[in-house]
Amino acid sequence: MRGCISKRKNGTYAYTIEMGKHPETGKRRQKMKAGFATRKEAESALAQALAEIGRGSYITETKETVQDYFTKYLDLKRPQLRPGTVKTYKWLIGYHIIPKLGQIPLAKLVPHHLVSMYEKLRIEAGLSPQSINHVHKVLHDGLATAVRHEVLTRNVAALVKPPKIPKSKTTVWSSEQLTQFLQYTEPYRYHMIILLAATCGLRRGEAIALRWEDVDLKARTLTVKQSYTRGEKGHIFQEPKTAAGIRTMAIPDVTMTALKKQKVLQAEDKLASGPKYNDHGLISQTKHGLPISPYYFEARWLDLLRRSGLPKIRFHDLRHTHASLLLKQNVHPKIVSERMGHSSVGITLDRYSHTYGVDYGAAERLDDLLAYEKKSL
Image 1 (cartoon, rainbow, N blue to C red):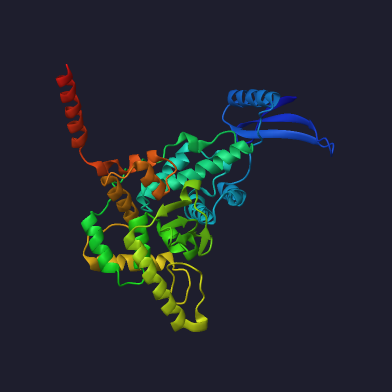
Image 2 (cartoon, one colour; image 1 turned 45 degrees about the horizontal axis):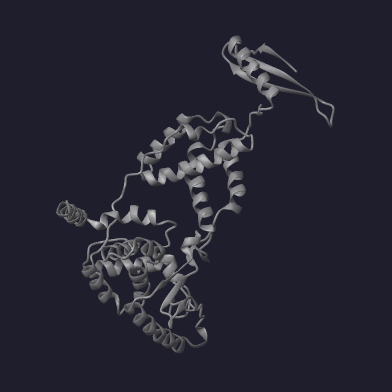
């Protein structure tokens, strides 16, 4: 295998490598790369290319643009992703990656392109560090896939650090505030969803998707088996993302009482709707038996929160409040972790360690221990 250097009309240099004849067509094959400022640069690149061909690591430079590649990458990635994640990837690629980088040849992509894009997303689009990190994650995975498939020789995203995500402090209510809010929302239709988050630690999608068949009223337990989450279009029922997410837990008295009232409410709904009632078997559903839209529920939650006069928190913070109150009552972290559906107790301890406050109790116990040892001397 051999190569040669040639000077082009515009004054730059190029190299051409003879790749032999095509095994099927018998036609002559050549690989050429141009754009070198000097003959020495071209000779150096030729030597490197010949060495790579000898080692079997030479990759023909793709002519695809970023837009061409990432459009195909999304189709390639689709079978590996949950429908809601596919929707997120489509949005990140279609609204941020392609508009900013789409026309750049994939092989010409350099770290500066990414750094510049992240800065524009921060300043011009007003994206948060977390959102920019989502963009970076998709870029990194897409380019890593290109390297594995021998479309690229390197992943430029691996050379770029996305903006640091500031640590956010978890906001929780006190037991008094939670009690006040639960009393305020009791007359409202969506009280059950709020109660399941506050007393059982369920996520919004898990509370909306909980079915009567998932509840054992005699054993006073419920089992989380599914969640109502975003699909590519609308919302769908799906199993939890992890094995730990499928969990069984004891139901407190206040929730048991509410479940019995919910049975009565749904019987009234069925009677009022008649043949229009389309029962989905959910504990919380519309007057006509349909699943409750998470977006509609979020609007009702914010309205109830505003009118209650209590400190503003996210709906998800009810789940945090649940864990924090249990830990303050010295419930074992392992039990709290299982109720929350965490994959390890370490996640629970790290996330809610602030609930323990200053460790006066630990200091007092140490004093007691030392005092005991002094007496025994």
